[in-house]
Image: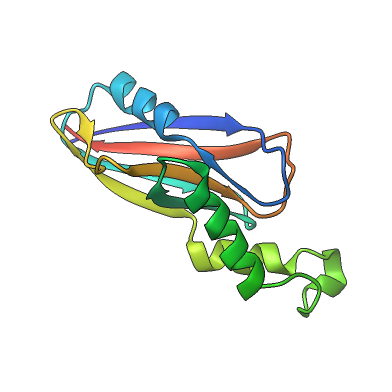
Length: 137
């Protein structure tokens, strides 16, 4: 078993957005030399998340942001008294910090329409970090 790790540095431009990182994860997988195993993609930070979702156009990503904004509105939570971003913490916790994808013959086991998204819920941020860990042979 081999294990390779890469750190992706991202910049976000909006308070809430989904950023397609599929290409960068594919690059990390290719550079790892591992052909079969698992790829874990992990967002560092309590107000960010990782999601696998359709990447064909922006409508699904916009719908995700809209759904979460309607479900978890800002300004009504206990943590807002500390720094005003409780909704970002709740959204990140609901979506989750990571996704694991099978690696099969050097390719991630994503379907035609699936992409990997970094979810920003407390931006914009000049620096966000995503760890990509590839385990296998």
